[in-house]
Image (tube, rainbow, N blue to C red; front, side, top):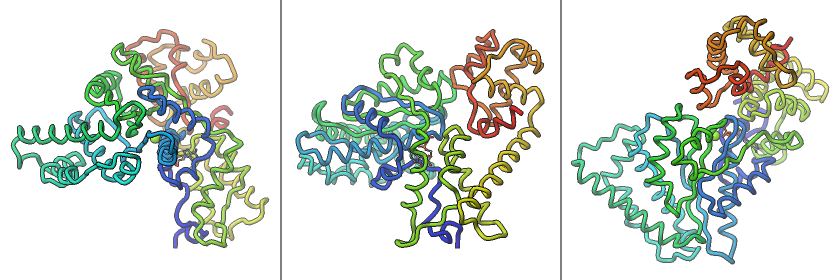
Length: 442
Ligand SMILES: Nc1ncnc2c1ncn2[C@@H]1O[C@H](COP(=O)(O)OP(=O)(O)O)[C@@H](O)[C@H]1O
Ligand SMILES: [Mg+2]
């Protein structure tokens, strides 16, 4: 038996994967009403590429999935308009090493698959003539299966077919998809398929970002039947907007910040309910709502980190030699003990790898939210020169204690910052640093 089964759950409710675009997903998505409304509005108003920005693990992919699914359901229910919004089967990601031709192929295959899967809904919405036999044939043909296999990295090969005919067949396939799309979504009122390119920070340099985006812009991003979401961490869209060719194309990012504390206990409770294994037995939960809030706040609202630590706490309680705590008081005691110990372990680990001056720098970064940092402070940590500061910063970044947006990172490398303060303005504390802040500042 596993811990979670023993305690009455179907499985681990705190797996740090994004909330899915399903009815169950909607139940788990807590405290994002305003954001969902905004995202749905932008989709319905056809306002170009919708961009979403926020720290890793804060809940971007989840809120996108939730909004897309709600809009999809609403468009199925609404009788008075013909708009249909279909979630694309798959979320896309793009990295600097990915072949752009492959990316485009992957896109078309996924769109084809989405149309096939949503055949019934498309017909019910009014396009009664939809025929997907041809698409199915295409998707099951040797050549396409080979291309798909290669894209998925399963070692398929193009060699069986000469390149030209391969290209010809693919272009035929794309044409067919395009024509299907324009039949399903004949005008600007008819909705579309909603696609997401997630984790744009994977494009590690601004040159990559620009090159790829400009290419996609001409190939995919201007298809009227496809509604695009772009999502990425900190300031990523500043990188794109800095290109004149892209600036008009990308609108103001919607910032996703952490969920309001009032809603935080529902995150825990909705998961406990949703993962309950026996109808009449509520699962055992070792953490109090108040302590869950404490954990959430200590990690600056980063849900992925919260779930990671919470799973560790569950395991800790499960492995205790004594009986699990049941009373509120005992649960609180057990939590406090683990919490202090966990933070101390984390702090000891970083003390082992960082220099004294780097820890002092981290302290300054932690304190600056409330205090003004002066040049004397820098002198005190022996980092008077910009280059010494740069080295210290890259070490802190290496150990996951801070993060720096792509463009700023490049500015730092190119020595564009001549004042320490300007440089440090673009450095953000990671959840891990927040977690051990009071130990750093001691
Ligand atoms: N509003 C929410 N309510 C409850 N859990 C959430 C919410 N948003 C995100 N989560 C959970 O938090 C974790 C991180 O969310 P995710 O959407 O993957 O973040 P991001 O895309 O910003 O990195 C996931 O485990 C997800 O299930
Ligand atoms: Mg994500």
